[in-house]
Amino acid sequence: MDRNRRDFLSVTAAAATLTAARPLLAQPVSSAASGEAGQQASAVASGYAAPTEIKKIEFFNLRELEGMAQKVIPSGGFGYISSAAGDEWTKRENEAAYKRLTILPRYLSGYKSADMTTTLLGARISMPIITSVMGGHGMAHVTAEAGTAKGTDAAGTLFTAPSQSTLTMEEIAKASPGPKWFQIYMPDDPGKARELLQRAKAAGYLAIVMTIDGVVSSNRETDRRNHFVIPLPQGNFPEPAGPNPRPFKPNLGWDDVEFIQKVTGLPVILKGVLSPELAVMAVDHGCAGVQVSNHGGRNLDDVPASITALPRIVDAVGGRLTILIDGGIRRGQDVFKALALGANAVAIARPIMYGLALGGWMGVQMVHEHLRAELEMTMRLAGAKSIGEISKHYLLT
Image 1 (spheres, rainbow, N blue to C red):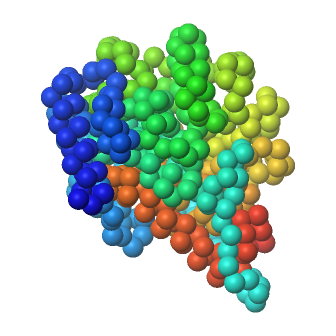
Image 2 (cartoon, rainbow, N blue to C red):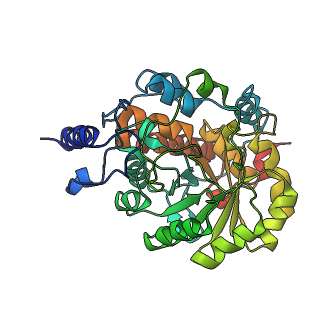
């Protein structure tokens, strides 16, 4: 029996067992199986039929994936993943802003190859493209975050595990030996926050990504129209759902950054930075990095595209911390442009979730490898030999 077939049967069997045994919003899903099946714990909950196939997928560009995924993800889950806040202007602008930047090739460079390897906070990875934080991977596939982590590792890059995950952070860590960061929405209860952070460090996560732009719920109208409530267990928050299912701290401040630093001793990355002033303050408070992000347009609409905000942030920090960017990246040319403007790496979200839905960990791997191939093509045609060589001189400004 080939591995793809074995993976599919193992995951399907685990899913059936867990669906029968666990009620909606039950305790965290466990990896009961051994071997590869143990790396692919099911995220199925009663009443939600997430995709199950693990296979290679055929596509020609990342934009195609959304329509393909819509055919296999249940409508409520697809709406949650694909939609954004308000009029969704910022979501559209994230992509459109890249097209207003043009590449200025430097021909006759004499280079015959392109080196895409890079290092992020000590982790050596195959390309400056990582998996960004996304909540509830079980809405896209039964293997949930375990599948995404495994596919990311297969592509040789870094995975960011969400605190709002279907599986526990420990289950996710077991699914992949590759480098991983842990993202946190700060709980209002300091004891719970400390517990989460200590668990993350013990599980081998190398840095903490603190999301700073989610202190209140946004107006995601698609979810309201669908009457959608996340139908899966919350692996790191096993308490039953109640009148306040997201007891996150509503008044985040720099004391919370210091709290994370003291509890873990790990590098801290602030996700949600759009202003140079905030980026400079991150430097002053000892942060290791910032993720230039508008949450994929999912929180506050009518804020600038991430790539529009990036240059001023780069200029303000002057190389004193690592800079990541997410939002609207759909082509290798987009990655090249972000690097040229000063980002150290880009983080990909929705296309990864669509790849997971369509092919499990293999789909995730293929999304990463497709984007890497486009980046390599862009570097070769533009005349850049390595990631470190890419600069604003390759853009027409």
